Length: 101
Image 1 (cartoon, rainbow, N blue to C red):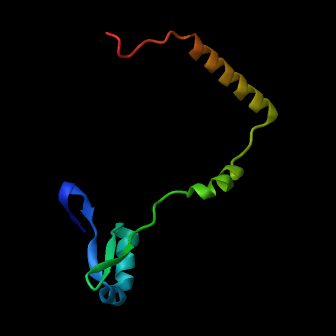
Image 2: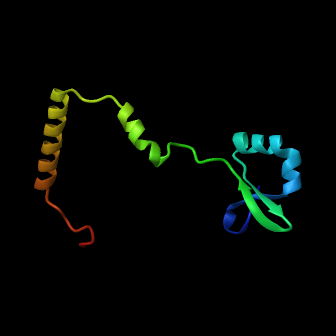
Image 3: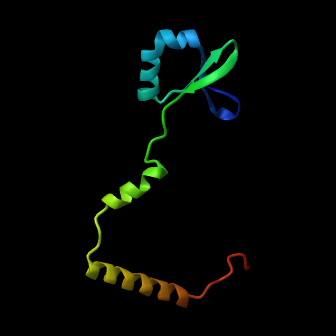
C-alpha cells in the first residue's frame, strides 16, 4: 500500500492470477497488517480484499444489550431520581449566548 494524492492510503492492485497464487500470504497481510488489495482482471477493478471493520455490528446490538446485567428495582429508582435531579439542575442554570460579545 502506498500514499496517493491527499495522503490517503491506496490499496495495491493485484491480478486475479496473483491473488490465486498468493492467497494465503495476502490473507495474512490483511489479517495481521490490516492491508487492503484491489483485485483486477483485464485492467478492470473487480474486487477488494480488505479487513472487516472492527467492532460490533448494529444488527447485533439487541443481543449485546440483552447480555448486560439489569438493575434491581431499588437501583432503577435511585438512577431515575439521579436523572431527575440532574435535569432539574440543568434547567435551573442560566443559558448564555456563546456568540454574544
